[in-house]
Image 1 (cartoon, rainbow, N blue to C red):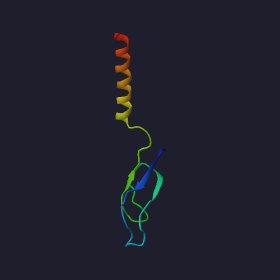
Image 2 (tube, one colour; image 1 turned 60 degrees about the vertical axis):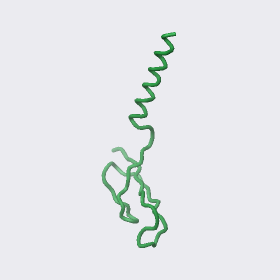
Image 3 (cartoon, helix red, strand yellow; image 1 turned 90 degrees about the vertical axis):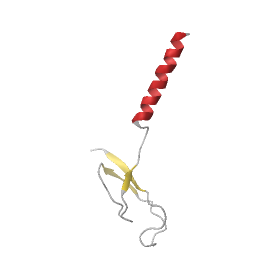
Image 4 (spheres, helix red, strand yellow; image 1 turned 90 degrees about the horizontal axis):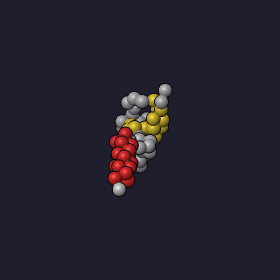
Length: 71
C-alpha cells in the first residue's frame, strides 16, 4: 500500500499549554487520522507537483513548440 506524509497543523500551545507547539508528522496509509499529541486532525502533505502544475507545464511546452514551428 502507498504511504503518505501527514502533519499536524495546529498553531500555538497545545495539550492544555503543556507543549508550546505541535510538530507531529508521520507516514500513514491513506485515511483520516488524528494527532496523538494534541488530538487535532492530521493533514496530508503534498510531496511533489500537483496534477494541475504538471498539466500547466505540459501546456507551456506545447505552446513553446508551436511558436517555434510558426517562425
